[in-house]
Image (cartoon, rainbow, N blue to C red; front, top):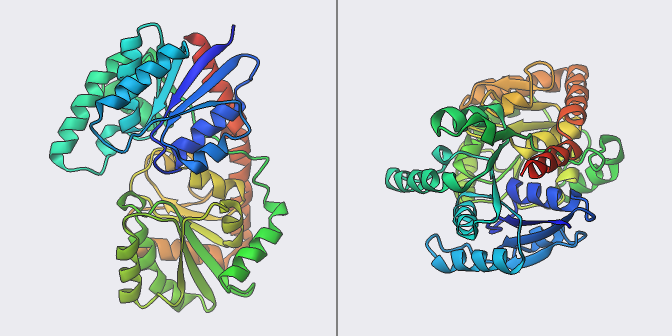
Length: 374
């Protein structure tokens, strides 16, 4: 008999959590597992799992307080005789934990990409979220965390028994990220944004939210324009801070050198077009963009923060700088631009580490091991 697994995620946008679930759903052996997906009707997510025989159940998670979501999930679990529910994302995970608890016969797996303490909410909402999180933790059989820091946080701050917390790093499809086969994509992106091959293109990618620290990337640009004769900049992504960042670019006088691309689905080609990738984050779990840039053998300048320091060792796979430091960021980027051989060696080391430690196959194998223990 096949194990029936229901994946629950809000699906209101396609981010790292949705991508991780798509990787797992597509990678589970169909001979042993039957998969179900409860999420918002997110077309990018649906497309990502289109090659898998997953049964989709649209659930509207847009309203924070909606008891009908709980009823819908209980019905899906009961009608499909679900064995394991696997959820992630604050809203979806909370409802899915309760639904699994009501169902009694199911086991529950919760993926934690970011602890509740990292949510961008006010103090009153934070108290509420913490209360809901602590209450619903009792319905969880296994917590999957994406970094050692999160593992310790769940055990020490949340008081979760060590045997219930399993660290599984996010994975990347290394067979799809082949730096030596991306020349066509590189030329296409550079032509689209009128960047010629004699120009250095420095880029950053991610959702335009405070945690990503993009204002510090923008603040580093004036110094880089002074030090590097032919240089252009690219910020890839969409989010609530876009207008604020665009105003900052104008006030810094860099808007003619910086392009805001908005959301892009062709991330491999985008990264291939860049000469240096900057990740100026202030708070992360275990970012996928770092793995993507590493898999593409790109020299990386990023911040020395939890999560990222498990991906990159300074001076080996990239350069680590202090957060909120435009000057340090500019100096690190210039070091890479001035020494192409050194930059190239960092990129080669970075891809080797991704292939060894952060492959999607390894992530799926370790996730299946958790399912089998339940």
